[in-house]
Amino acid sequence: MSEKNLILLVIDCLRPDFLGKGFSPTIDKLSSEGVVFNNAFVNGPFSPASYVSMLTSRSSLEFNSISKYPVQASSLSEELNCAGYKTACFSTNAWISPHFGYNVGFDHFEDFLEKRSDAKKKNIFGKFDRFVALNLGKESIISQIIKRVEHIKNLFKKIERREAELVVKKMFDWIEQNKESPFFIWSIFMDVHAPHFPPQEFVTAVDKNISEFSKKKVNAFFSYKLNYKEVEIAKKLYSASLLYVDNQINKFVEFLKSQGIYKNTILIITADHGYEFMEHTGLGNKAKMYDEMLHVPLIFVNAGKKVNDSLVSLKELPKTILELLNLKSSNFGDRNIITAEEDEIIYSECAYSDTRGPVYLGEEKKYEKNKIYSIRTRKWKYIKDFGKDTEELYDLENDPNEKINLYNEQVLNKLRQILENHISAQVNQKTDILADAISDINL
Image (cartoon, rainbow, N blue to C red; front, side, top):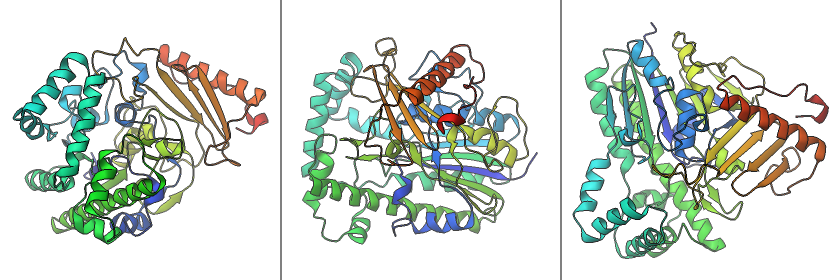
């Protein structure tokens, strides 16, 4: 068994195009010392769809439950736990919790939800919100009105979001108690996800002219409609949140060095999906398949030094990680992206609710037809939305921002067939059946 430790740090909603601009000095330095993938893509546009693939190398749509972690699938955490690794997860993402089955294979799981839910239970508004969510659903009109009122209330409250500090402190404590054995840590930082209320010193570092009222207004109405100036403020608050998380990662790296385990630890930094700032008429992260939602950073530290431009997806992480740790498994059939040089066809997919967000537990049947897929090659992006019965085709070489939806019957027919084969393979739980030679249309 390898004696190396593994730490997977996921920064929720982090886009790679916000790195290298002065708001991520620690991550940028780590990138210069490690293996960087310039063309890494997630296999789903929001957390539940993305994390299933990241941990199991399989799509969430292969399983009957599209809201809950598929316990029947082999997972990276289970493989490492069985290999003698101590395993821990520290998640401030409400979707990634034992409630949704994500504690499989972890000796320790910290989801930080108990304190938040307890605080909410203590006020009348919070109790009513919980009652509506449990009985009418979080997508109901009343629940949405409550959400809007909560956002407006924030205009009159002093808010600072310091969740990354909680995560880092918990990791310090756990590592001090478990560092004598090889370990695997999976940590999720939510601070780059809206609402963006980073500590004021980080807002000032990005733009000292952002007023407290502007910060609150942008966050209060972020899920609705902002004008151009407000979108620019939202981007700056996003950058300030990134700067804050980067500061905490620096503290964590220095801690690993102080414990004498940094060089013996493979550190991976990535994201579960990206974020939209009106590139395609929306804000935040929804069930959309454009690159601002699917393109993510991927950095391996203490695993060599290289810049890799191949097309890769995060469902290839389990096999890559196991091989880096000199461990073998037949449960993950994808390639080791550290050694691979060729592009792959990237599949991204999910089921979605009426608000184009994740499907909640108990609503799987209601939204079983709301499925969206994308196929990405070096040249083409094909998007098929079965819920809306629409399809889109983009020439990424000439239209990297995905603005011109093309009609090319030859390309569309080939990509439709590839998608049909992909879905068929999922239904039959077989390895993907790809179409024959596709060089004739430069896929």
